[in-house]
Image 1 (cartoon, helix red, strand yellow):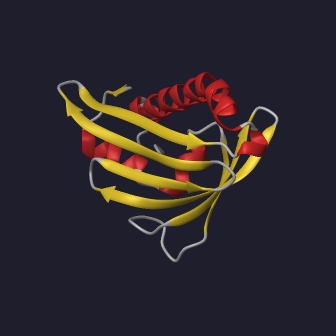
Image 2 (tube, rainbow, N blue to C red):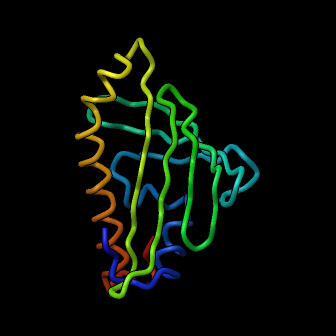
Length: 145
């Protein structure tokens, strides 16, 4: 996703982990369970809802490279890794979101992962579009995530 803002502005917004619920439709709440709210080692419980399915996703920040990368491990029922990557481009910032998720056998394992992939991709693209819209809206300059 292209965000028509310079990388420092995008980093400032995306690095505020406590505000991700403002632009992530699937994240209902974030509770920090570590003594920190940013950087490597930050641990949070994210109440996640996808359609009728709800779970608490324990996330641990494993990579924090300002102003380009935030990488997490998912340690809930659904496990895996995820990352945000920011790259400066002539028109602003390219924001890439990648995830590698694993579902337990009792939730259908790889079959559920395959079925969930297009649904989750659609949700994440929508989240990125919402993030970009908020950040690019001049009326939200002081309240952007």
